[in-house]
Image (cartoon, rainbow, N blue to C red; front, side):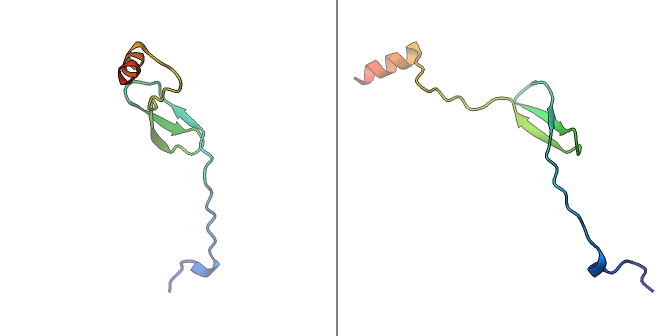
Length: 68
């Protein structure tokens, strides 16, 4: 006889973790992070793409002047 519980009487509670990441110090393009609550791990980028808003450098001023 099968002694496993009937699946219709079994309830499974799924809990999603609100991760609290502890990320290693930068040492390359990515750093490993580990959630202090559930132990899940993930790779994080150490930099973001550069976006220049309203900032100019000598090179960009020269390029803009050349287009005029």
